[in-house]
Length: 325
Image (cartoon, rainbow, N blue to C red; front, side):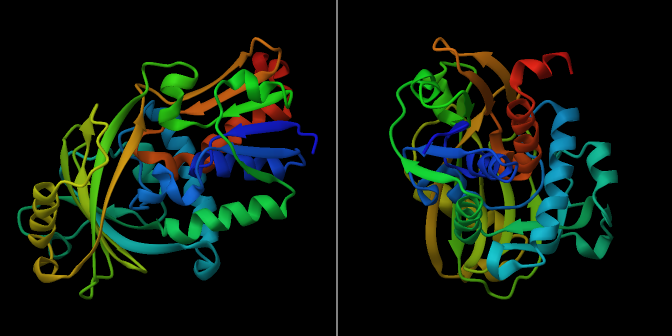
């Protein structure tokens, strides 16, 4: 297959970007070392809310675009894995820029009876909650339906992809640290615990943007996802029993029934953090144009559609022709 674009990276950002390109009549191949089910995206809790990501103005725009796309997908939850779920973002210093809170339909201040003990303020909203076990296969199927191709392969350089197509989109996340190379990319380790659902139907989050520990409770179809941690610069993917116990304790302080809920799974993922998201264009040594789309931190799922549209614009517009935009 001759390709217009090679998308390097098969997580949620790479797949979403590939879908946008393929549905814009581009001939797209995705090169990924791992299946989507084994990427960092598959570990995520799946709440659509910006977290640990900059720059603020662009992030809000990307997030709101994604919010509307995901809300439409929530009309077909069995197919897409996306549902609209009500919940509360409590007052733990979370990332709550005014443009986001004003842009989400129905978002309002939480009432006292909607807040657990120990929390004085918060935001109440109905937002997309994504089951990545269903959503990632949905994106893969949607890509294939649009004529895209998925290939499992190790990529040693971006120029390698540039020899196969005139455009490359770099969605390698944490891998960009070595592939670009970009030492501004660093891991932020996140640990989660999945337990049987004792009857919880609303999400709850208390997450200070700069804290190494947080509390969140996300009711998914397969159980309740409990979190979490955000440890800068930690590469270890091994679940820590003491950390898991602390997560359960924090969540049980909100919903006491969680204290005795059977544990189904432990997860550890490495968020691909960067000082700011990188969506930029550069010419590769072999002549291909590379659009970088990485550094989404803890909000890859939340900004994926917005970032995909911006990255795809450079390809569809011919890259350099858009430099004067």
